[in-house]
Image 1 (cartoon, rainbow, N blue to C red):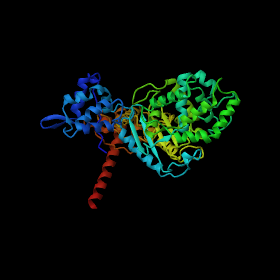
Image 2: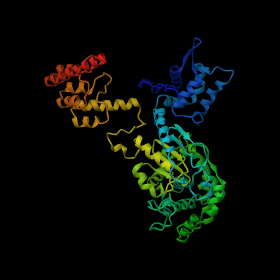
Image 3: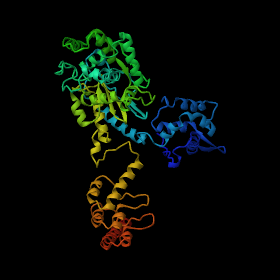
Image 4: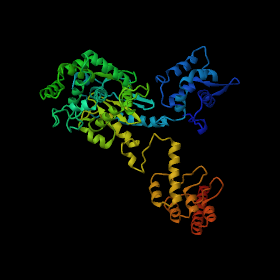
Length: 544
């Protein structure tokens, strides 16, 4: 892996740079001198783009990458001048600027994904669970299969493991179907036939709500009912084609397939689903005029829709992005339909494990009996995991583990924002911003004499953090005359008593300058002790 390139920053006066000026600035940052001319290396520049998280097959960059790659042929050097560079990138120059200056939702994407590698490898060691025997096709999958893919709302991509293997969505299709019918039929029509309550039961349970309708759209009864509401004015073939096109659109036109053997097995031996459908039919729960055979066919067909982890992550990212596909920028679903879908996924998406998943992970997700999980971090990213070994709740063992470990490392849990001091990483913030934020709050607390705040910060922050002028909290507290703060920093936090700022001033100098003799005495005493300790260490080192 290449070392990450410095982020490209623009001064406030240059925010409104014209395309031409912007291209020139990017060129001069990444170009090098070759034969007395400034040229940019095409392979190097493509790698810089890749490290931001973007891929060459991103629809937004296809014209750029195609033009740049035309200079990698055998009869060309791979280096281009400024004018050629402008010709290649001008169509998407402002988008490239965002990528190069770290203006995406995950600024340090390499750092973030290196941690995902570790989480993936941890889960790979798990061999608990068993293959589903619901239909023969699911039992024939290799139990070692394990893939993860992520797509952010800016289209940054990551995948690892068996991420290109094809597998059937099974119940993961229910969240897409629900968003689709909410978008096309409207909430009032949909919720006349489908509830929004957790059932507290298995996904294929026969019970219905007191209103005589499926509890929610994430269980099998609700999934069947959703198919009954889907484009009822169309013929069966056209209805499936319409749904297929919506899936393709949500997946950014990446792989969406159809597994015919799975569909035939579902239709042949899906006895439980036939029972659920006829039970609802007997309760007169379906819209008038429903053809039950057509509905069940469509349900089995959509359960047999085939994805990869990579295309699945794009579907999840489209939901995370309010219904807009990140890589094509097409609006797929209405944002209100997406909001309602995520609400039901959060409360009902993981079968009879949903409550515990919501407690431990705190994010909307939908699992399938084939081992897939689609998880959504709203306004951040979509995640797709796949491993065919499932637990007693019919959820992927490795997938659930990965989701849990993800929120243990990163503050993605919906309520992590309530925790002020946490060692969790927020990958949405750049390292420079995080350091500046921590330094600012420490110095602000020291300046105001807020000892209780400093005690909280000291649990996880560096109390010797310096600002632009290399001043520490001790400098500020000494200058402001906050004796208790100075004493706490020296005695409890064990900070260096004599740091120098950019002008060579120490906290003792500040205490003298602003007339705080008690603090001056305390600091001088600590400086003497500190010097004695340092001298003892030096003598010991010389002796050894």
